[in-house]
Structures are given as C-alpha cells and as structure tokens.
Image (cartoon, rainbow, N blue to C red; front, side, top):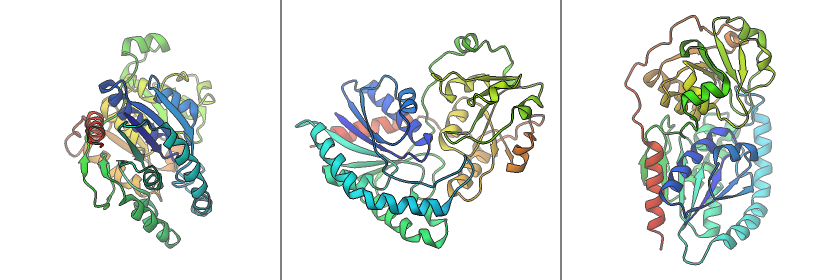
Amino acid sequence: MLIIACISSHGFGHGARVAAVLQALHARRPDCRFILSTALPRDFLQRCFAGLPMNVRPCQWDVGVLQGDALGSDPDATLMALEHLQRNLPLLLEREGHWLAGQCRRGEAALVLGDIPPAAALLAKRLDLQLVWHGNFGWDSIYGAMDERFAVWSQRCLELYRQGSALLSCPFALPMPWNLPGRSLGLGCAKPRMEIDQLRERLDWRTPRDRSALLCFGGLGLACRPAWLESWRDWRFLVLDPALATAGNAVLVPEELRPLDVMGLCERVITKPGFSTFCEALHQQCGLVVVRREGFAEAAVLESSLRRHGHHRFLSRKQFDCGDWELDQPLLPPEGMPLAGGGVDQAADFLLHQLQQCP
C-alpha cells in the first residue's frame, strides 16, 4: 500500500495533523509506504513523522496566504506568489508525476491524500489515483473572503477541490461545498511521546500546572520580549524561541520535542488561532489564551468554536504587545460541550478502507 501525501506548506498545522493520521495508519498496516510531497521544513517533518517508512519530495503545491508573522497577511505578495506557482505548475506536475509513477508498484493499492493544496487534484489525475481531501477549510473559502482580486483564484480552487474522490472534514471547519462523499471527523491529534513524570525530569520542571504556560505561535512566530514573561513572576513559561529563554522564568523546549509533547505540563497555551494547536491543547485539557487575528477567515471559525468547546481567554494584539496577558484572570468556561474525539482513528480507518477498495 502507498499513500502520497500532498501537504500544504502554508503552516505547520497541515503537516502535524497528516502526521497523526499516517502514524495511526502505519500502526494498522506496517507495510504501508508513505511519500510526503511538501515544502515543509525537513527538520519539522523528521520530528512529526518520526518512525514512518517515508520518502520526502520537497515540492510546493500551494501558496496559502503569505504572512510577515503569525498574525499578519500580505495580499499583494500572495497574489504574486499565486501567479508564480500557476506558471510553474505544468513543469512541477510533469517532473513529480514522472517520478511518482516510478514509485508505484504493479498491483499495489495507492491513493493521494491532499491537505489541502488544490493542485493535488492535478497530481492525482496525472497518476490516475483516487484523491482524498483532509482538512478544515479549502483555499476557495479563504480567498473568497479576501478582496475581489482573489475571486478568480477562489473559483479555480473550488473547481479543483470538486475533482476529489472523498473529503475527510476536520473539526473547526469552514464551509467546503465540494459535493464529495466522505465523513466528518472528531477531535484528533498525535500523542505526546513522553510521560509527564519523564518530562518533568527531562526539563527539571517543578512548577505546578496552574502556574505553567506554553508560548507557541507556529512556524512564523510572533515578536515577544523576555521582559513581558518576567512581568508575570508567579508564572513559568515553556518557549520555542531561544531569545525568550533568556527570561528568568522561561525554559526552552528542546528541539527534539514538539509543542504537544510539553502541553501536559501547562494550564495554558498562549497562541494564535491555529487548528493543530487548538486540537492538541483541547485534547490535553489545556486552556487557550488566544491573540486574535484579523483578515483570515479560518480565525473567526476557530475562535467561535473555542468559545463553545474549550476554556479560553482572548487578547488583542495590543494587549499581547504590552504584556497584558490576563494570566491573573480565570479562564472562561466553554459555552457548550467538549468535542467528541477519535478523529485520527476515524481518518486512518477511512483511508485504509479506500486503499482496500482499490482495483
């Protein structure tokens, strides 16, 4: 069995959730092979996909929205990048299609898993393989909510999404009117790789959970000053930025650990609106302190869903930039019930069924 995972390089969350599903599938079928076709950084892929039999093909299949940091967006640069990608797609499809065709063994069941570059539809067609989409939004919805210059790109994405075979719809989903069969998934994420006691020993972490927080803003990060951490003297922070580890109450997360590996130590995760971080934090009963994001359609859906399903507080960018993080205030309780879980297993079972149906 072979899965060709065509993964967006827009953000680490796409890779993290695909990794969780493929790990679960590998546990069911250790003979399954994986090819990752993505421009995500190799060190990130090695951490998230550790232990999988995989080939990595560095390929950029989508643009997403270009950003200066975790909260910003640059529509003009995004349009230029979309036009550049469109010009280069024929050559990319020819090159990768030829290489991938050589990796498919005679009689072997194979499919393309797209999360969630529209061009995955062109790749699947080139290889004559079924295509299963996996995600909580498509770029048709994101571009459709931007200015009129993006209307043609939104329509182009929609047409490609409708060429898929099935859709695995993750929680916190935007509308995906692609007219495809599939299923809605429960909350899902990868599992921490260390037990809490081992983790405390590894990091020499003696701080109570209700005074521990993880600062996590994805691959692009967000400018922050060590003094802002030190202003919260009763708190201790786990950080991913070495510059912030100079604060007297901060500890740098080792490179081999993922943010989700250390969340179990923390009462709160201070972050941006982000799918995988939300799923990982909710799964480990962490509250989320979220710096709000404007101009990106997914953010509003994530924020409204968090109000319903998780303990939370929201900060403005101005509050974050002056260190007013409301850590002295209680987390607000969810307005509704927790999300049902099992999404990773549901997705893995669905993909396995699809592979077993391959002629």
